[in-house]
Image 1 (spheres, helix red, strand yellow):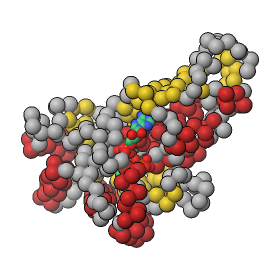
Image 2 (spheres, protein in one colour):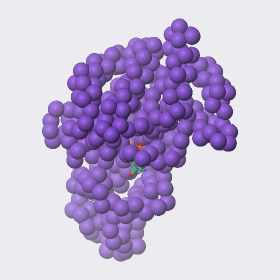
Image 3 (cartoon, protein in one colour):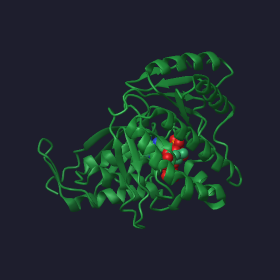
Image 4 (cartoon, protein in one colour):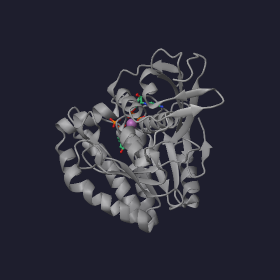
Length: 361
Ligand code: ADP
Ligand code: DP6
Ligand code: CO
């Protein structure tokens, strides 16, 4: 290294939005490489809200890799962090900062440590895909810091090894995670199906039913489902492949009724798989169920779907309205039927689409 002074630090900050699956990933065929049992499709949220901000720094005075999540130091010893760090380090390029007089060669990265500080501006581990935004942001920021030449697809394969859903957050708009065939994982990557502008009318409303950390993490939940649920096998082999094709078509044609029908059915089947797991996993609660019933009734009374709902591994509702007028009406109805008051834990709504953050807590 040209500069042996212990004084310099190079830093990169990145911001990455979370993504919500409309055809869900639930189940791995390879736990270490994080290879899924089926394809999945998601929509990446607006970066203005629900995002992770991560700063990564490198300098000769750092003694080991360290990370702080939401202000608290966490261990990096887990294999997910280690796999991401290793994959990025071995692809690191040359970096030069003339102002600081710093020149880092490819080999130097092996002897340099990173410090990482990350913040989620939404509940962590509560079923709003913090692991997706978190690992996508981490990989993106480190790749920038270490001057990787890899394209988005290759970066998505690295983010995938941090958390499966993270591979989809490297793109905006509608994104498909292709499960891939190769057991090395090289073809298990995310691709963009349509960009942010493609379906501009859609508005995403997130009702935070509970911001508490879930009892069963997605990782252990899906492991138990793979081990015990027959429905999961049927879903992965027979149901999802057809739904993926239908969902791609619905997105391409801006066909909201099909989109809504598929998204709701897929969310409900994913939660059915959780119930089919032994012991059963309950991610949704009474409020989640009441929201489903409410949206279903409304859609039926209108004759054609106005709102799609989907729930990840947690009780929080993600509702996708077909346009702004529907979204405004939905928000009004939610506030009326689920009034935020003492004693209820439904305390905030986030309205996506160039977002309006509505905190009624
Ligand atoms: P979620 O539904 O929020 O994705 P998961 O159970 O899938 O919940 O993942 C939660 C885990 O993701 C956290 O315990 C933490 O290990 C990791 N995680 C969350 N946020 C970040 C972040 N900003 N950077 C790195 N890892 C994160
Ligand atoms: C229900 O990506 O959080 O949100 O790969 O073990 O980190 P790991 O799990 P994770 O699982 C997400 C599950 C889901 C559906 C989805 O995002 O597709
Ligand atoms: Co997650």
